[in-house]
Image 1 (cartoon, helix red, strand yellow):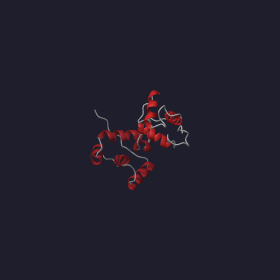
Image 2: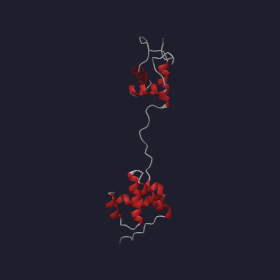
Image 3: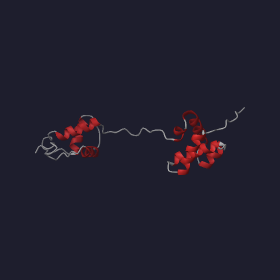
Image 4: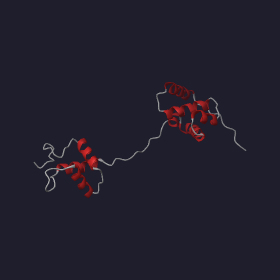
Length: 154
């Protein structure tokens, strides 16, 4: 036999926060949708009606209610931090690039180029693009051909 659904009740403070959030409408659309789903749940609407009116899945409504009960309002309507792609050019790689650019140019060359620096990095088992080398040199304000940086044999 099925269980009787418990009424979903928001605290007065949370209800006020949601009302202000929805009224302003300045936050991300997903956050506002979650806020409206919690408001509708508090008003006693059936989860199926909420999912239909907001264009979200039924599971989303139930998960949102559960997350509110377990973690509170801010974590229920907010986004989790996403890891993203880790940087390929770390501080160590930047140090290698700068060190190479400031050293003597290879035989037969008057100065380092991004490609030459990249070839040297590959020998150190660091695999990045020539453009990443160029951007790193630009970031550390180093130009392989300038005398003032000590990167040229002139």
